[in-house]
Image 1 (cartoon, helix red, strand yellow):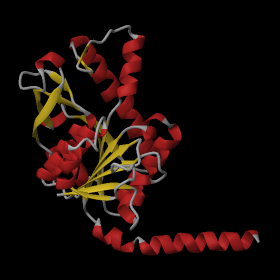
Image 2 (cartoon, helix red, strand yellow):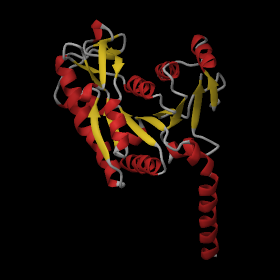
Image 3 (cartoon, one colour):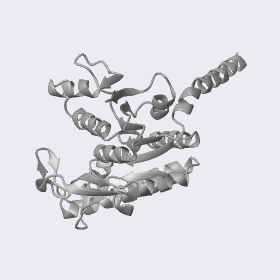
Image 4 (cartoon, one colour):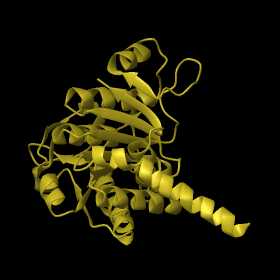
Length: 286
């Protein structure tokens, strides 16, 4: 019985690999930008699985770019250092003391943990932020929020050079101001700007929800930009899903072919989305 079960497992694996062939061909030499956040960042097991998926994607011809967040880690460090935060309309004010902590946590602890996880799976990753090689210049989003920036000039040359050397970029969401300031950037916004500058084939936004839901609570697997705008207008899309879908719309306008909001809690979510017919979230096209 055990041998029969083993044979069925191997047959299922072989069938899966065979069915993936059209998708392997479809994504050969494509660029896929992945915003990493949520479950995969907080769990060692999730991080290991994510890193393995990214390495596999590169080995079969994809050029992956990882952009990460790190809000909970920043909050923990601010608390540890007893740095009090002010909020304006529910958004944190990033003053000089806070932005120093943000850079330390994002470019240091969080970024290097992801790099190390990818390297441990046999990949070759390098960590950087938008401040490196003039990758991202920002304008101040709102003077009331302090050092919070919106990308307005992205030069992806350093990323293209890394692709040539089969290196996976892992990017912390920080950027430079024209006067040398350091700006903290929303992770989703950063990923969208990077994807747009690269004319990426896919932008994958990993989150802790199943995807975009309709008024009945059903996950919608495919949506147009027009549907997204209508759902925001009528309140169907609300709360934290609004900035993610707005990032998707901006990325599509910049030339990204499709954006997928997918559940990072699902094992191998990126592989399911790229290499299977089923997918793993809500795909948004122009």
